[in-house]
Image (tube, rainbow, N blue to C red; front, side, top):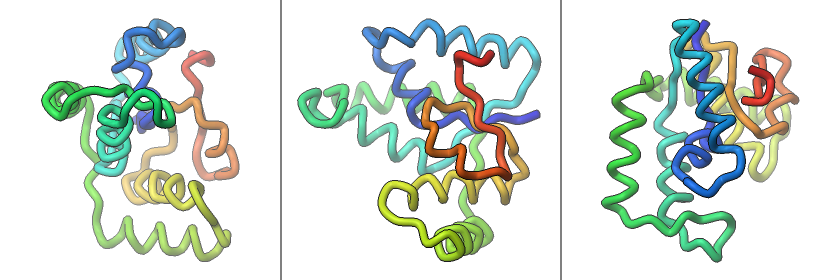
Length: 145
């Protein structure tokens, strides 16, 4: 079963000082040992780039340079499968935000879920409990693996 890997998982991997980094690495290792397909979306890379290059004093930024971030993104591109955006993704996102009257950050989360729906991915590896509102997906934390 494929898993979409959420932004916060990649951020943990990029942050050597994150106390949950090893737990996250172990979870990905377990999934790989089970031959699970691990995926990402353009939005997830965009969010990852934003956090990596944001100054540390600003909302959890890592303060990395564009060059350092580029190297990390290349690793994602090498070891994870891209789920590309399409018109179908956009239409599914529009349906989710309108039907659930979503506001704020939940709008971004709906785009992740829309990608999952369109690509037939049911599992999301994340530490973001906000995704639990979506009964159409299975939200899995690294601590559960």
